[in-house]
Length: 38
Image (tube, rainbow, N blue to C red):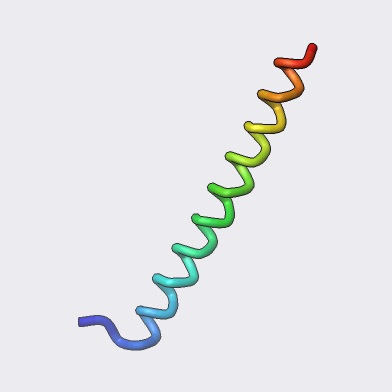
């Protein structure tokens, strides 16, 4: 079992990872679009 504090930390890390992942995929999609149009 987690303490609530540990649980919150886990959730925060997941959110950060998720946001980073979203940003990265967004950037790579843009890069792909640009390279396709060139």
